[in-house]
Length: 305
Image 1 (cartoon, rainbow, N blue to C red):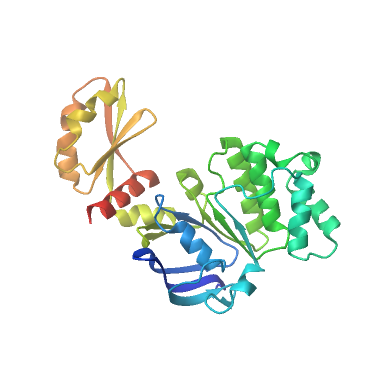
Image 2: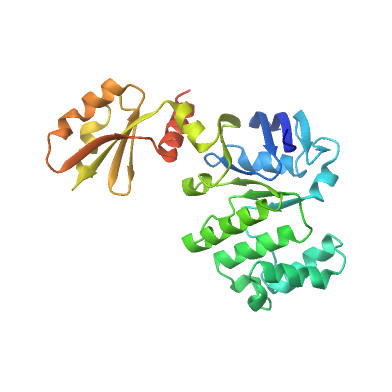
């Protein structure tokens, strides 16, 4: 039986009358990489801050790394690496100076050797004397990850770590995350990128403070019951007004050069797209919905409630 790095039940947090997180249950086995998804304001950051001991839940119970989330937040903090949404290091200090400061905060023994090893592992050695404020988004991201890893955490909580970072830097970041997970490190990462979600062992989708879907990517797609038809061809965008509002169509979205038409009633969807099958320039076919199709659908469901 897998040991759980995170095992919490009914986590709730209120700010005045606003319920930011409403009865959240999360159970993440050690050594896995889980994705945490949802629109802005859905409760992801608040949940992460409760898990790492920065916010005390108003209700709920459970443990993070075996420590009680209500009574042992300090013990949790010492074993968690938390990477915030915004770059939070000193821009007028060099990469090395930032890491040495963090090492002192954690009272890490043999700090210089530890900083040297971290610089080497994350490819920062050649830039160690560069000011943090002069770094690109991708290099700032590496510095932040390096600082998270200095004290050898057992759990990484990453809050939209790749926002605003170029595709190559995102790919390199995820390669490093999976290398770390292979050593037994557990990772919970919030993201808006569907390709990143697909790199995770499991995903959780939260909206308005409540978890509304969870499982593997295949599980979440299957559980949605969504049916998707794709339309491809020259000037396919012109057919959007013709399709909007037709019976059976719950949402329409563009993905590259294709138009995705989705809903739950196959017969109604087929009837809606049937007139377009007659056009020589348009290819219409049923395909498995993408993860993004499903999340657009889930977000729409919440808005309709």
